[in-house]
Image 1 (cartoon, one colour):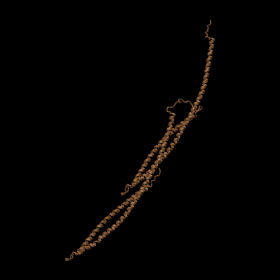
Image 2: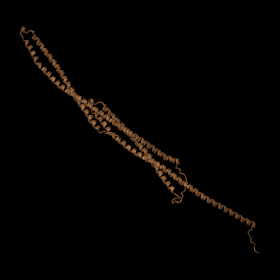
Image 3: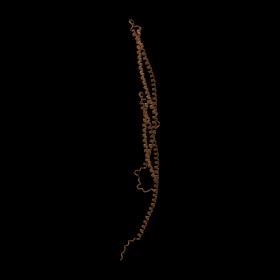
Image 4: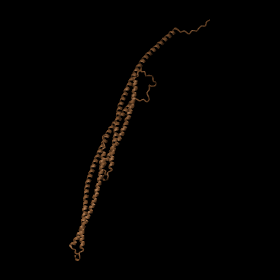
Length: 402
């Protein structure tokens, strides 16, 4: 007897119908969900596309705005850089002017000091602390003061050039960064979805730790501009001050130079006048020497001329002593002879005394003559120093506006 094969259990028609209905329902549900998902996907794709386009458009707009901002600040920096460069060039010209002004002070100072040294060679009473010496000392002080002021101004100018160059460096560095930023953002503005040089880059959607905020970025460039403007204003003020200093120092030196020259001319005139008067007195003294010498000769001759009368009177007296006896009388002749001898002797003594006075006066006149001649040489020496050694070298002084 054949073995019976056990068949799987059979389902009821209701179960079959229910199973089919379930599958229908599941298929319909799945299809509905799929249709909704497709519709949602299409909506989402469309929404994301529009959002992406809006976002990309907004990004493009912001890049353009950013480019405008950077270009604006670059223009401002360029303008300020041009102003700074112009001011540096002006300061460099003023630096050269100050250096030339200092150089032009050297010769007048040397001449003034040389004049003081030359005037130390005056001798005697002419070695006097006169107005010329006082004005020469003042001239040295004026020139040295001017040189000190010019040197300080030159140092300030050099320092201001350094400050302007520092501001220029900051502007140039900022401009260089701005140029690179414009180049980068300009390149970014040209990129499209179809550009060949785009690609995936990992880990770029981040904010760099060393980045700055827009306010800080703007403040940085603004500070560079403000600093450059401040240094430019300082430079303009310094140049204005330098102009006044150069003008004032040149005027002071020129005025003092003229004062010294006038004092020298007046001193030369005074010395020439004194020399002329000394020469006039010398001529008179020399005439008086001649007269006195003649007077002395006359006195000596007068004394010699009295020798004869003295001898006669004394011989007569000596002879009359030889009268004999009673003839040796004190007659009027005897008294008159005695009186004559005394009178002539007294007159000779008076002549000798006058001769001594005349000889003493002659010696005094000769001493005075030598003194006058020596003083005239002193005046000639002083005139040579002031008129030749000083005034001629001072003609080389040329003080123009620095």
